Image (cartoon, rainbow, N blue to C red; front, side, top):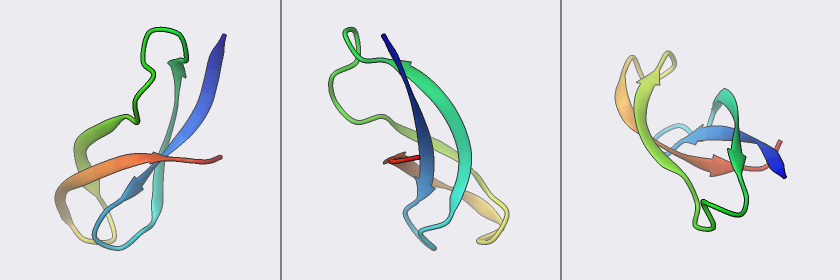
Length: 50
């Protein structure tokens, strides 16, 4: 039911966070604004494969 996903930074394309999401409730790709330690700023992180 739940899928493991990674959150990839839009700026530097680094995989910074891992989380899970419900496939049935959230069908579109997840997009969150989180802190990237490589960019040293808050950037948009999009869903990627584990």
